[in-house]
Image 1 (cartoon, rainbow, N blue to C red):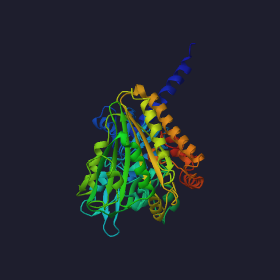
Image 2: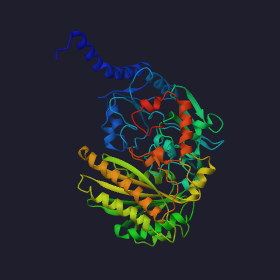
Image 3: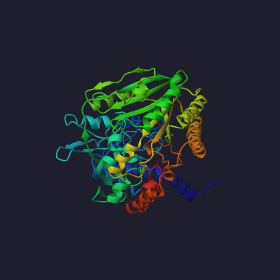
Length: 496
């Protein structure tokens, strides 16, 4: 087929139209004084290494914009309306779902220059920027004797964590991290900057607690802080042969939560040469009283737990468990806790399924599978309600365990195999929980998914209460009626 000169010109113009549009947003923003990083620049390359999953860093944006203020962020959003470029917003790079905080070809907005910590001694709040990690935020409170409800590993970023709810070692005392926000500074889809709190833009304030990237870009969080001093924590390490005892101890711990100042994450790790349990333990005080962790301590283990001078020191120590340079995926499931008569058998079922699926991918280069049992007892949910609630709206009459499922591995050639294994994992766990419900071994209760741990294929909005989704949707229609964030961000759980 021979093209006419005019048609050839049209085709060539169309072929370069999108790249030119993408280039234009970069140069336009740069000309307005916003820091822009281009490919080949050292800062650009460095920023792409600051993802927990190397797969996210493999995506190459046309440029990276790094605003230094809410006003610059608002200008970026306004300019995005003049082009068709897709964009993503990156905070700490913890979320491993490709496109959620990473992007190929489009505009990556980095919050790294929004790194403020301003403590107000009068009302004991702190203004925290989304460009920080939680250890940096806590370090910024040095000398105040106060803590923010934040990540359990210091290297976790603030932005995505907060918009998904945020589970903390302090959650059984103070609820989700999002329950401790007293004001959001937000850039809306139309490029305006607003505050959202209990008195101003109250619907937006409520909906931001578990809505992800659907409603706006948060440029600052004002958080209620809480007293903190020396803390106790570290790890208990158990052999895989202790699994039945650990499942029983876990059930008992969550069902009869011993102390609101205590927290655990019970995690099993499995690889080609690895098969053991690591339990993160925490107590908000110099040491736990007798009886808090007794059932776990009675099981043969090694311990690194000790008293830490500061909460920051503990969070920083936990960074040891962050794997750098690996590809990484995450998924989640939720189970109610079986009662004492039923015992731990339903939990053992979940572990056995995880173990078998992980076994099926052990030949994948560098693979490490993990399952983490994260208690969400009634006291946690009650504290969340007491502090204003959130979209997850966990009932206060039921103990839960939120399960985090991870695979890390080395090479992109195994992406599809790990994707299939991940789907097998979370669908199998859901089926097992439902089977145990059908057999009367577990209560038939509401089981939402925890956004911070969810896989991109999982139906976050389909699993929370319809009234919670409707409230968020009503807010979205009000603040983003033209679906700007739905259509223009490169990833996320869409709110339609």
